[in-house]
Length: 125
Image (cartoon, rainbow, N blue to C red):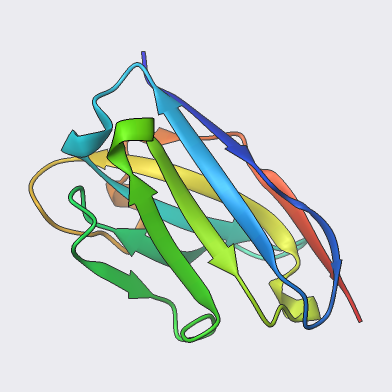
């Protein structure tokens, strides 16, 4: 049974940085594309970033491009989201997700098979 556990959330001032981690178990990480999504209070869940199973391909939401970086370490079964130049509008619960499949990335949450419980990020102004 797949388990995804996020960590690294917290309170940070605008302009600051945080690194989120998502560690998987129960699956072979290298067989899964991984994604980060977020949900702000009162809003729908939205795509943030995704990485293919090898780590060679990534893509980002326009709102985070140039500020966030997704990376993975398959040997550690962990995917990271490095967030810099944080803004108050980045405040949300951040979720990681895993999608079994070919070398590809996925931006739609409906494509993902497994989800973590989320980690909260609060950016103060």
